[in-house]
Image 1 (cartoon, one colour):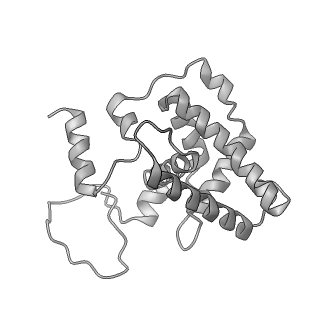
Image 2 (cartoon, rainbow, N blue to C red):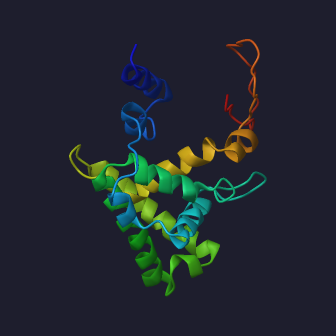
Length: 189
């Protein structure tokens, strides 16, 4: 079985597509000359951390900012995304900031957590509407890319895998049926 078949089977078991599937199938490309044009400054990474933290806030477990999801997004967008998706992603950062300025009279970084949540809720509704009418040849929506990278970055990070999910570093024997109680965390391993 090749990697593509394995990923398709995993996607079917999970009931949908695998986040970042193309990156797993094709492998990440080494940084290109276009990477410099993306300009992932420390301010932009902080911005992405705040967007991710709004999506997965800290509760009794660490949030996305603690997992350094902004830095993860930078690496994935720079090294693994096609040029068209890189452009969509970077334009999306500007779109979120402009929408926040329009809605609240201040940029996303200056907005309160409640204002950020309200804004991203509206953007998420736009994403849902876009995806309903999206054709296969249509480009990805910037917020869909951000959400996917937030989830992938968080749940594959140490805080996400060991504190938000249940984790056993060296699992024992296979147990196909383990009792589940409502409210139990999912397994990372």
